[in-house]
Every structure is written in C-alpha cells, then in structure tokens.
Amino acid sequence: MSEIDVKITAVKNAIRKSRPMCSGTCEIPPDQNVLVYGFQEDGTAKWVDLLKATPEQLDVVSAACQRATFGRNKEDVFDETYRKAGQMSTNDFRIGFNLEKSGIIDAVYSQLLDGFSDPDKGINAELYKLNIYDKGSFFKAHKDTPRGQNMFGSLVIVFPTVHAGGALLVRHDNKEEAFDSSKMLAPFDTSNVAYIAFYGDVEHEVAVVESGHRVTLTYNLYFAGGPSASLPKMTSAGTANDLQSALVALLDEPNFLADGGILGFGMRYKYPVDSNTNLRGMKSLLKGADALLVRVCEEIGLQTSLKAVYSPNDEGMVMMDKILDPDGDMGEFEESATDVLSRDYGGEMIQAPEWDEEEERNITAVKWITPMSARTPLRATYIAYGNEHSIEYVYGDLALMVHVPDADSRGAQ
Image (tube, rainbow, N blue to C red; front, side, top):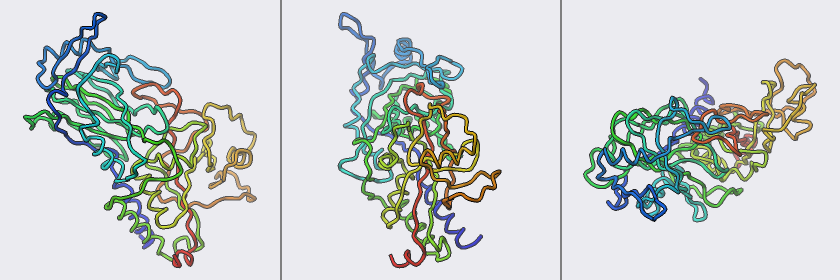
C-alpha cells in the first residue's frame, strides 16, 4: 500500500468513528412515571404509576392500546408477523414525564451531533407515540419515516416497568449495537428511565420481549431553525481533530491531486428529499460524520458542495445541484440517459457509460474517498418498511464534492 493509500485510509477511518446513536439512563422524579389514559366523556380516566405498576395493571393498559401498524411502501398496514405491539396516540394519554427538564436533550445534542454548538441551532423534540411491548411483542427491521427535511432522528424513552428482552438493535455500516433497557434499568432502586437517540435512516428493530411489559415514549427529533447555508460552530475535539489531521496529511502529499481536482465523499447517512430540496440549504441538516466532514473541510479552506448523483440503468454517473422529481415521468431516452441529464437537466457528467466509446464528452474527474452507498434513483423509491407509510419525502443518497487546489497552492495556504 502506497503512502497516499495509507493516508486515504486514515481519512476513511476518522469518518467512521462517529456513531449513529447514543444512549444512557436518567433519574427522574417519581411522580413523572404517572400515566393517565382511557379518557371518558364524563371527564374520568384511568391512571397507573409505571414505577410501581403490577403486571395486572399493565395488562389493562395494554388492552386499552390500539394494535400498532407500520408503513409498507405508501400505506399503513397491520401485520403481526412483522410488528406486534400496542400504541397510543398523543390524544389518548397524558404522562408526567418532562423531557425538557430531564436534561436528556442536552445529552443527545452533545453526544449525537458530534459536539456542534450554536445558540440559534437546537433540537425540537415532538412527542409521537406511546408503545407497549408485552410478552411476545416485537418489531422487525425498519427505518423511521421522514416527516420533514429537518427531521433527523428519533428518541425512545423506556420506563422502569419490569421486562426482559425487547432490546433495540441498531444497524449501520455493517455494525450492530444493542440497547437493552431491561438490563440498563435493573441495577437502579431509584426512579430512572433509559433512553436512546438514533438517526432515522438507520435500520433498527425491537427484539422479542421475553416477559413483562416494555413501555416507551417515542419522540421525533428535528433540527430547530430549519435549513440554512451555514453549519454550526464546531466545538468538540476527538473525532474532529482526528479527521482534520488525517485530511491535512493527505493534502500535504504533493503527488496527490497535484494539479487540483475534486474529492468525492458518499454521505454516511440518507436524507429526506423531494423535488423542491435545496441542496445548498441541506448542509445545515447533515448528521454526525457528514456534518463533521463539511465543517472540517471548510475550516481548512476547502470549498464544498452537496450533489445528487444519478446513474440511470448504471449508464455512468451524473452529479446535479437539484433533486429531480422522483415521481415525474423522465420518459424513454433514445440516447444515453447520462447525456440527456447533463445536457438538458443541468447535470455534470462524472463518469461516462462503459459501453459507450464516444470521446467528445466533458467529464469532470472525481477522486472518490468514500463511495456512494447507492445512487439517487430517477423514479421514487419508498421505504420498504417504516414506522409509518411514506407520504411526502423519500430517503436520498447524497454526495459531498470537495474542491482541492493544486499542490503548490495548497502549500501556500
């Protein structure tokens, strides 16, 4: 392996250090475990203290739940071979738990967002549902349905009801991490909840509950402030320093892109997109390692841009500044689709079709550091399995293009 290859590997390894989840436990006041449900027209309701609830009381709560559905392509379906659980919408219950005062959002901000800090950028947490997984309940592998471009993940709060099994398994980059709330809460004799936050496009599943009742609140997590062209100020060390050092070391190699060029990075995460998506504004909505990469590149003076990369029928590749309408009719091209996209739709060809030997093409060379996990489809591809059906947005794969000056100019910086 050459010295340049070693340094490219170091950049890749630094990017992979960022985790797609964070978790922990948090002590809360005992009265925040009180759940009120079963509202009647006369104003009466049932209630239960989840800290002290008996199995019989939790059976009553479970019986009051609706059976949980999930999203399959463009519809919500009920199928207990794929998901078996109970759920209540936010209109069907009240609970004493106070997320804002718990400090959990602050922990998620510092742990999941790689230490970015900006007084104008925060996290909005929207209560989504209460779920009860009793014995035999589960939810097979799925991804969370995007409900807006600024939605980046989910937060699950698990209450201290006695249960075994039901671990949440999170998978990304061929790695799996288990969040086993029953084991995390077992050592405490005080009022504690367990929590996990993770990016919505990351595959996860709830393993079978072996006994007891697993009671959870789920929140949708949004970037506060909406899209903008700027990233928050980076304040963390660790991963950021490692990535910056690795990238600077690579660019210090005079034989690496000696005449300048473009570095390509396939984003680690997928993002909610539609035909109105402003890719420039998406920079402020990047997650984890993706946001860190943009920040590091810009802090060392490199110009960056987000692109959608299309490879219709694997006929080469075209990068674009916009998302094509995934439900639109692109028609049947009588010539190479990459030529049509680059000529008629404002695309920039970065790889010609292998089967086509035409020489008179303007090809923009890209040196890929991390490959695209998938190419953006010309036609809509909806989430196969989600916690709801996909309505407005689809998850898209984006690429970061980093413009590198020639070796002499880099040395002068």
